[in-house]
Length: 531
Figure (tube, rainbow, N blue to C red):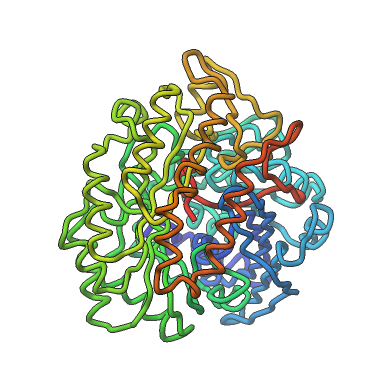
């Protein structure tokens, strides 16, 4: 089983560490309620009697449709777990800067930071404040894309790929050179270890949500569309086989790895029984690629009669949708489904690697509406292949689909994506610092031969929101809904974010508020907004 030591090595490590107090600090720079890997790492470490501490520091931006998800504070939460001391330091709620985060990390042997691109600089500030004897490890999507840069900036190792296995072996005392997966520094040399096979997702234990504030299922944690508490996100699969050039697939791979329907529903049952959740967000990248599995999960949810409100905020694949699937989703309690359309021009869509016919989106949206499920479409403007006309076609297609909500983003070259490598090789990256690299800034962040002009893209971005949301038919439809007053707080948050997209500020990123760094996970793929 990947991530577990062979018995011989395990026994040897246990003997060597029997009388040693070995502790590890996992410092997460991503949203804790999406950090299932962190929870599972705790379980792996616990099996080896290794004390674990997590520090999560989220610095949220208030722009576009990225809502702030943490509102109240928490001190240290200390839990005793089978003889292992586990502590969560929620540095976002505590509003910790780099100095204080580093200070609270002292006394630990390993400090691990999980990175998204906009928090690169903040993570580097933290590790540069740590003593030299502390091992500093980076992981996450951004780390997979720029491992050497992070190593030169002060990290000792970067985990390229899934983190559970490498971290468990590292915490057990195994030398870096013997662990498959990491890229690390040895003196002045950078060494790339053999790649680690992706894990059997059915072998993973359930996330240890009880280590989070409010068990991670209640305020201060919520998704932008959350209506009922307690609430929880759930990840039932890993990997996406699609070839979109704007996506980073390095961490979880392109092979679709799905947990069995029975195991998925058992985890959901544990959330209902232990935490009393009333709403569930399934946040997979490719949930319904195996449509028979998806239907089986829906059937099991109906059989178990959980009475949950269920949502697909990350979206499902439009080319794997049929009437039976949507019908079963409706009966199972789903009230929100998103689709990642990205472009309203078929040629542009094909050139980006999306490879889904626009007619598939028309039919998927039509079916979703027919069964009375709220539907959202995601679009991206400013691809290399775009023109002013194709962007107008995208705006017109958004209006044609006439979904309940829509999100627009500007194509952004993130490290780890083919888009990034293409622009680096033959174009120009326009951001001056990693903390400016975010797809809801309202700015075009690259220049490439033949690509549309930045001013045209930014004008199209602002106009897209106006053209869709300021239509009288859209306003009337939402005002006349029976659940209008219940949904009013969500609508007001969306209105505030919508208005922020319309203001252009010279000399800084539009709509941005930076506090030490930014860490807003809106999309597993980094290609478009997923809230």
